Image (tube, rainbow, N blue to C red):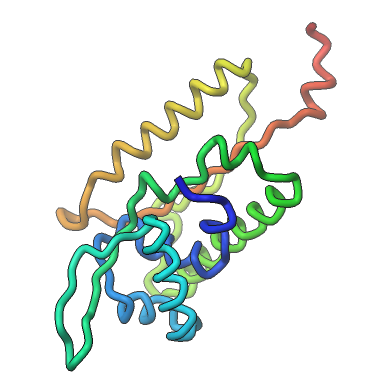
Length: 183
């Protein structure tokens, strides 16, 4: 599993979001999808993610005197595990949420800027709800959510499938809990 600092860098987060569920992409294809990232920056962050085992080279082929590599995300490694999250400071968490929400906004803006974007027809959803749960019930909920998404990550492009990015943030509302009159 990766550290938060490794995954939650803004450029690396965008690279991972571009690769996740996209199958295999070359660095050139990544640059087409992220045109504001300079080539040197792209190569540096792809190398960092590869060295850490978060993305892997799945194909190499010679192209005009160089080697073109195709990469894919190792989704089992592209997670900040429980131990790494426990080691994070409050400031680390604040910074992580800033990068996470920035990447979320960036992806949504890219989607909306397309002429063919049609949020109601395409099932765009942003929702917030409250769930009252004991620590055990909450752990079970998180496990269920992760399992639900994991079952769908095995699907591949084709057969009319459209890639959807699912972002999830779970935050305790201690103020509401403190107001609860039950012991």
